[in-house]
Image (tube, rainbow, N blue to C red; front, side, top):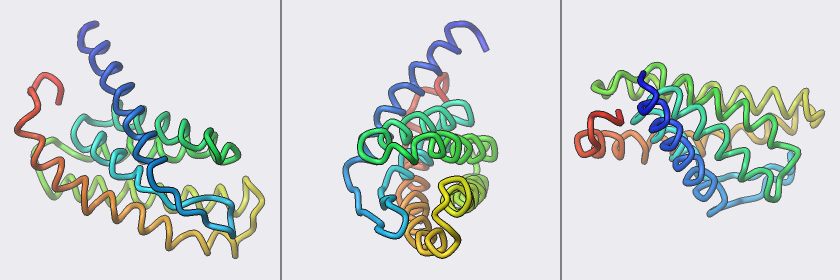
Length: 167
């Protein structure tokens, strides 16, 4: 990748991180068992990853989602940085920019990373216990399903409209 290509990817990742933060903060449904919240930021995490690959997906997902957590849910921010960053990185690594099957597979593996990552963080790292972490799993599944329902078709529609130099 050229220096200008790297700078362009970084600028794109920054813009998508901001968009991910806003999407995450737009709808926040508190989950009392864990003091976490349901949100729809995964739509932007998966859109970023499936359109632009692992670097942009990982940075946009991790940084954007962590910024949203720092505003209102700070104990989750470090875990979110890692979990959502890995979610976007993995989904972006699997997609190939052409295949709907690879987009779906990228989403699926990214979804597993997110749901299992928050389960482990809540049960052990945050010390909330297994029952509380299990109670949040359905909400996390709703989040990643929203990502699939919106991001996969959106990616399919945008892929042919975005200059190839960016993808």
